[in-house]
Image 1 (cartoon, rainbow, N blue to C red):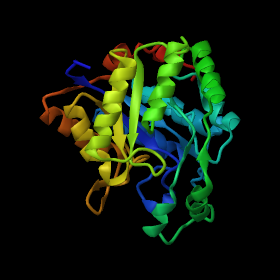
Image 2 (image 1 turned 120 degrees about the vertical axis):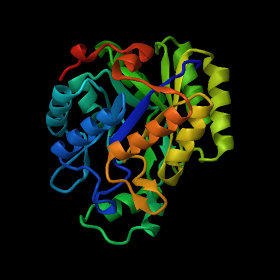
Image 3 (image 1 turned 90 degrees about the vertical axis):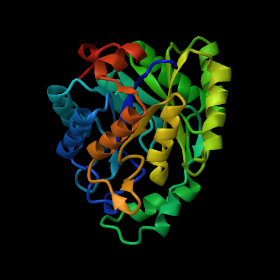
Length: 309
């Protein structure tokens, strides 16, 4: 990627963290919408959305919870909305696909393989929980496999092709890049591929510089110049990986889904705060931060007028 323009994606909320971990994690539809709009105003071209049951903050893929968020975001911003097909590892594929099926966004996430997904180490940091689902949500991840078989991935790709939705291909290890190359070679994907390298989830690749280099080299070998590369690191790795990645050619993703922190021992008070920090890092490296329309052009998205919300 030779362009001096970098896309910032903000992952506003997700199933990794639970409400008891941070008072700043958005839970209700209004909170999530405001967080997404604030991230866009701070410089994010894309907002990646999960949603939660507002009664207790439990991750949910119920379209009724998404609808007011999407309406508010679209009314107040031209930001690209990226909906999850990942949901949470405890959900069935049918549950996970409901929002993308109904709302046909410009962009959706697609995990490129099945994997162990260990959140249980967080129990070493957090001991008190407000809701009774939170501790089991973390402890049960000792026995979780996030399931995306080849058949699952092909089904999701077909869903996107029918609606014009493109994908953020989330690759947690080099095997996921191999899977993506397979589907590309079968003619089931269209370029440019938006490849999101994920570092630091237990069950996936680590968050060392050598891991970053390995993922970049593997993508270059398998995909050539037919992709746009982005990355994110989880937890304390977020800003460090963003800076290193941007310097060697990546777009960046930040947000409270991936990390609750803005500095050592300091909780981020908003998604916008993390986006602003990422924007400062990018501009200090003499990169221009993409607008939503610039990102649409780079990724060849269908446009906000062609979504189902």
